[in-house]
Image (cartoon, rainbow, N blue to C red; front, side, top):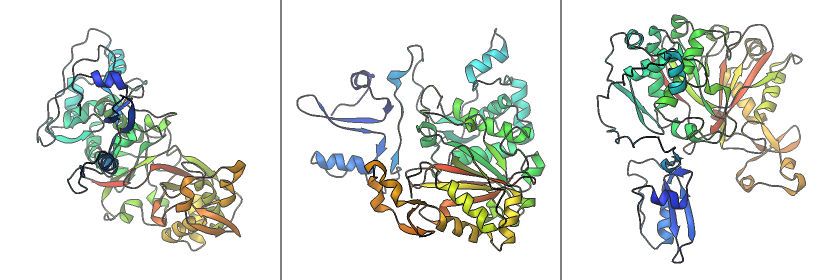
Length: 435
């Protein structure tokens, strides 16, 4: 067995991502390759080599983790490898001070930005943003490179995004949420999929900080929405290291990687808001993260019944991730105020609406036989009947469909947002309290 020490093996076998394990035959040929960390695959490989189990399911390590870009692919001037982080340190390092002779806006945009202009994070601006908090306090470590997200470094990225100092109230819990292993930002940062972290804000903090929850909720309607979402993306970029020309392998990307933040329109909803549904008190504020695709609009102006509106949403839900993929994904349904009035007026509470969408969202079995094509997963799918037609059920359970109410009061529109892979192999929705 040979372990990589000087990038010689990486250059010889040229993996795009690491960790990477190659099983080499006596003739020098590659027999088997494993990219990323997966306990089941490691144990299968050990068994193939006649070895005992090498990865215990209860050893404290995650069952699996995707890889990230190999260092042998870095440009020659990328600099020395950083020292490994002490994941148990209570105090982090202070942010670097940089003297620049160039225009500070151009320098910051080139070095720390996301292809849009950024505000230079001067010492004075960062100090104001921190509001006297301990600059070296570590809130989390951002995968895939596990950079320390100290108060000071969070504040620096918030300054660049255009946040106001009072938004530190939301930034700290947001960073804690994104570092939650259940959310798996490591995978979201490195996947080839479209996914980006969508922030959903609930509770009094919406009004306290000026979050928008009405018309244009997904767009350029409020500074708070735009800058909080962008601050998170800059933190992921600068501390997590997943740059769009490197570790971030998304094939097409998502506009949400500039900023993806909404607040729930609780005042226009007849149902309990998302954070209460997830166990928080009505007067509490909370931030929820969902690894989502871009919104897919549902424009239903014809139906006058709640059932008809829900059927239109179910048709859109059938297309998330991929039309013929079932069970492995979740969805967030953003229902507009006009639609929710119609749905609620027809006697649906949130649970009943979710159950209806679950039972009425399916893919016709005939869709798997076009031009002789099928799917290896179809044998795992559950067959149901919708409107007299045999279908495979799209979602594994009603709980895979999350519902919030947001948007303007004029216009019969809703939206569906597909997830990245769901469950232990993918990303799970997480909610954190906000003071």
